Length: 291
Ligand code: BEZ
Ligand code: FE
Image (cartoon, rainbow, N blue to C red):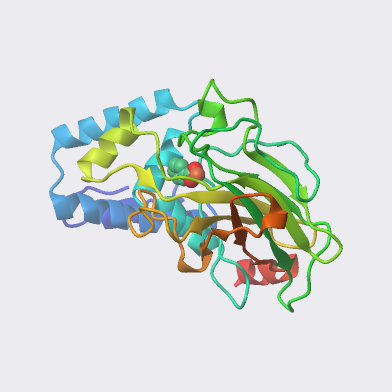
């Protein structure tokens, strides 16, 4: 493979790629860049061996914390802006299509299927503000798309997601809705409040190492999907929320910010939030991926 010194180490490792086995062009591209950047980083900060060992132990601890309910590596990636960057590389902003953002660790599959206009609220809180969410899901020509599935989820007015709070009913503030023949969706939920991402253990250590707080602005999560269209994983943000410009996971996009307004009486909620989404067709999505 080669005798190394401080000058040639990166080239020696890169030249070794694929020497004893077949690797794809993509594997070569990824490993070449990873080695260049990793070696560059180590030289930049003159990483010491004690720090290297500390980092290895840190990753071991993060691995031990990870399970079906807690994906510590996604959380760590979120804190340094990696998940949002990967999402922006995967789903570049194009034309009129809505922007995506991070999924986060709190999605649950198979939420309750509810009728259009139904409520996700199963438990009431003294400080809650109820809200009627509605809008259209359109294609890029502006036509409403019928039969689109929307999974929605949010934290409760105490700042905790249902699955982390033993005092909330299962699937509280989660639901699955469908657009009508005009592409219109509607549901009742609560105004989402800011909350801290998990800040114990390794995620908390990283936040403190970076001198960051753990808070996220109030947001509602969406997964919007229909055959023939590219699934959209996104969030909408409350324009009046704290932490909008200081999100601990860097996931806020200007185009995803909307305004809660007082609701007209006939809606029966405190607030009204209108937001439209535009989906890319699956064919468009494939063309982008192939570029
Ligand atoms: C969330 O929005 O639920 C979230 C996103 C990234 C990290 C932690 C939580
Ligand atoms: Fe969230």
